[in-house]
Length: 158
Image 1 (cartoon, rainbow, N blue to C red):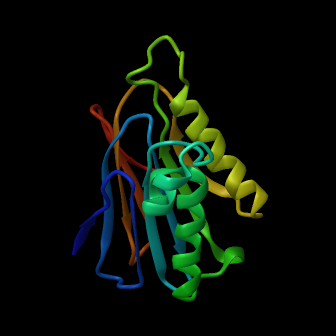
Image 2: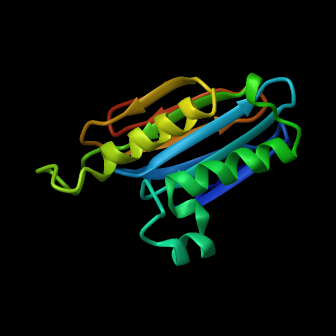
Image 3: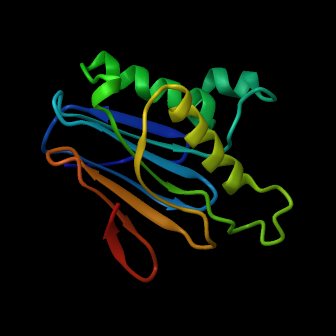
């Protein structure tokens, strides 16, 4: 069964029949995590890098922000038996789609916060398709851990 992960949402599952999918990754980041031993997969679609200026919003929806959403994603996966040392992580998005002049750099800042979060937690990002100026869709097949990205031009595995 395919489960859509909307903007500012996350889902974690251990059902091998599930596929987690998110769409319209522009400046947002899609994060797919998978523990091949525990067979736990998860996906997060976050909009903004940090919650420090919007703590009230982050309390209501931590998945809107990279810092709070990534922590919530890992906790939910760990609660299902995933372990940090086995975690496979792939990210997509962080494009410059609505900010052609790079004034806000939200996409770039989102990429940086994701990489910094995983680096600080001792987890290596094993695949990515980030940056550029195009939208992406992302899917995680929980049975295999396979992550695909679809752009306007092609579909490929990361």
